[in-house]
Length: 336
Image (cartoon, rainbow, N blue to C red; front, side, top):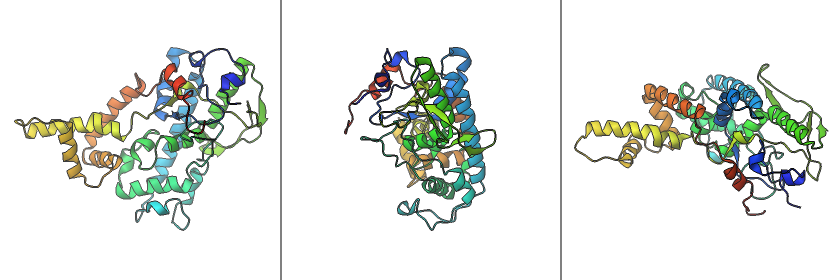
């Protein structure tokens, strides 16, 4: 029988009554974990008293620890060529083994039921070699990229081929211990039975800066497989602070002001600014264009990050209402 978590364990209430995402247990839902939302929840933890707030600080610390380690290691990599799309993730390409080891537990976890899979959760995910190659290609094209790529949410915002689905897979792996502890707290609150899973997958230890395993008590589905819940303040349906947002809400505004100063008699709009940028940066995808722009104008990057940080730590544009989460977990998808 197809049931949501609350239905399976006979919980009274709807999404607004729960601090967790009330997931469908038979398929994935198009919700994603946004590191910038975790930063938002962590920032507000002393203000709202919600159950997820203690976990937000732990999750934020784990993400900061992992990505600062990863970015610092990748700074020393000097790719000699672009890796073609058909070759990404394949054997026979020279890759740094220490960085690959850092990425080795980045695969999808079906216990959360998040992401794009339309039918049963399949766990295809994205291999460590592929993630390595995505970063390698960006580093080849933008050698100074790590002057600007320095926050967990920048991986999705600025790196080609890394979207919200792949980002969620990696984020889940990093903060798995936090999510499992959160899940157990929900089970304790509602007297939901659990089963012990020994050495269940890996999580990132922010203090020792290494992958570790632990035992967890988790609820199970009808097949005895673990279920992992997510705080509802962690999820969104669209990553707001990505390259498209940067381009539209900051760079184009700045470029438009520049053009209006040069041509005061012309009536110019954002599309004119975009056309000018495309001429200046031919063959550049949005993420490439954003990085190239910041390389040319590092002062603009500082101003942009100040504005973005104010948004992330304030009224975050990606924070979903209970009704929006309810819709995402109730809509009939192909294969449901």
